Length: 256
Image (cartoon, rainbow, N blue to C red; front, side):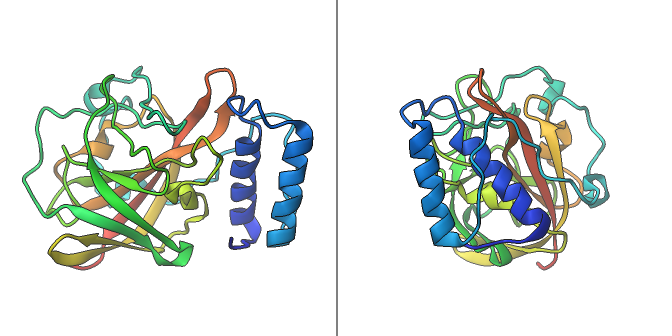
């Protein structure tokens, strides 16, 4: 496990605090949590205090997503379905808001792997569609990510290619996209594709949105090509058993 400093460490600490206090882990007593925290301290030399509640602050945003070619669409997800409930899988607690599959983008080579070198992210990418409630399905394995196959793929000449993933699993393991809490402007992102050259991007913005009110432009099929990475973030809602917000990272293409 890597030790991070500064604002990045604070963001990761907040995520770990929320994980330790989730109400769907009732078999962990206070003593057990303290013992686990002690193991983490020994392993990483980083003291993580035991939380008293599931509350916490999401990481600060930076950059401007609109400068990456956003269309300034509605505030409620594709189709302005602002009140839509977030989706969730059986194996992980967080979810992504609604999207519209009515039109699928032109077929392009599907992505197979996501890499963010500075953050040591190297995760499988699999195509995903919609859950039963009309929300974007998220892979059950928190170690992987999903490409929203009804939208553009990385490498498409236009539009927003969306990759989604869980911030954690029900067992408390951090997900592949939990590292987005520590992303910086300018970070390199590489998407490998099946039978085609990799596509390279650089991070230009990070923002936090209510998980039920994602901007529709995140799923746009026109405009400059961008990569949109979405996961969940704090605060954690103990009553509802899920995170309240989505963390959105936008990256622009730097090579063809």
